[in-house]
Amino acid sequence: MTALTELRGAWAARWPEAMRLWSDYVRLSEPVWCLNGAAAQREALTASFAMIRLDDHAVVLNLEEIARRGLEGFPLEVMAHEIGHHILCPADLADHARLMLRTRKGLPGREESAPQIANLYADLLINDHLQREFGLRFPELYGRIGGSGTLWRLYLRLYELLWRLKPGQLTGGGLPDEMDGDARLGARLVRVYARDWLRGAAGFAALCRPYLEQGEDGGGALGGWGDTAHSPAREMPDGLTEQQDGEGEPAVHPAEDPALNGDDERAVAAGNQPVSPRESGRKTTRRYRDMGDYGELLRALRVKMSAKEAAIRYYRERARPHLIRFPEKVLPRVNDPLPEGLETWDWGRPTEEVDWVESVVRSPIPVPGVTTVARVWGETPGQSRQKQPIDLYVGIDCSGSMPAPVHSTSFAVLAGFIVTLSALRAGARVMACLSGEPGKSAVTDGFTRDPSILLDLLTDYLGTGYSYGIQRLREVKPKLRAGRRCHLLILTDTDIFSSLKEKDGWQVAQQAARDAQGGATMLLATPATYLQHFVADCRQLNAIGWQLAHVPDWEGVVGFARDFARRNYGDER
Image (cartoon, rainbow, N blue to C red; front, side, top):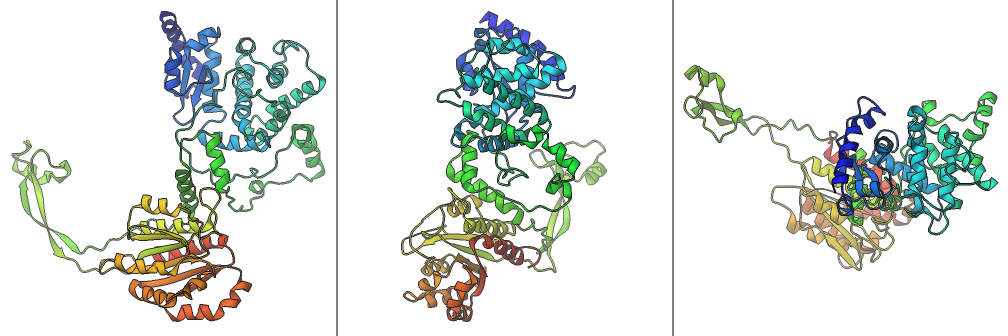
């Protein structure tokens, strides 16, 4: 233990120097020093001797494992490398997630290996920069780390080419011509995409894909320096529901990449170089990833989050651009403040209550509880009226034809998030109901302002029946609060007319609209040509007090929800 304590002191003394290799302005807390395997396991360092946690940017070092591998003499190399994950690649958890997505594109059928391949790619970028700029001892370090398999030998050959080492200095011998050619492509890729490394990730993965034989992508085979591959994320960063420019492009093998074989330069000379949307100045439309892809990303990042929690985060983030602005409530006062006198201020009361002018008038030396006083306020009736937002009942068709929101994107649920969160922002109370009948239904216990209750219910899934059950509207009246109005909103399709025609469905819908007193809207997501078969039913729905809205498909319900929220709860109301 004494030797490890001395090792910690020696490495700690080199920590500022390791930071200065990147910049004089880098400020990171001292590493977490683990003196044994149990301490390393508590810090989630289990598959490497060093790592950086991208969520809190803490560098963790297992000194016992470093000593066992004989790496005591490489403090700058190891610590500067870990700092490089914070400075260069991937820098933060959001870019780490994007790197993982690009890497997965190059590994069809082997997506589970994306963390290891992404780690190799990031390590190449960081080590190449440090070695070329400062001439560190990375060649000797990699000679001691150890590894096995064809992929590891390919990886070491990349370093031989990047640093102009003798062939076999790291690989231990000659490589087949095909592998050597792949290594040359990989080395060129690392240099070309050094400043735009996300673009090169899929190509690097495609290069490694043939070498991922069974059992070769484990920590031991790849040298045991999986400093980001096995680092769990304790939280999910925002911004990952939206796709970045170029993210949807297929992976291109380096042998076919025009940026690596010179085709880009020839295209520029010929005047045929394609211009990206960002360069052209044209406005690009937002593109979002599906909920299923989002869930896969969470699993790749090892985020400890349930499927329901991930779904709530996904729909909430997608709903955010469509929400109303937080109302700047010029809240009309029902009572205006009226100063009435003074009273003694004593310890235990907020200091902002002290009337310092009156206190100093009493005594230039304030004595708390003796000379300090506070103003007493009364109230006088104001002249302006108090505004009260309309409560909202949102019912969503959750029949067998609707997708499960935790597995794939449900636009009906997304619309429910938009109107619910907008209503809560405006100060309204919301009651939510999922219905797939004949079959099941789920409803909140009346109207509430608790978003966790509402969003948890909206991301449930029933998958029963064929329509929203109009009989569910019977549950609204008993939950209405005296003196408050409610707007009824149902998101469904034309199957609702079959529900209306069962029992006394039309009477239930009519009575519910009357009881709510705040309006009733029925959104039908169905093609216009099909809606023509229900003209008479639509007219009857209007006649009993329901406003009818229509979108051609479920994707269109998002725009409707945005307009509905702004019209009923935003500045436009």
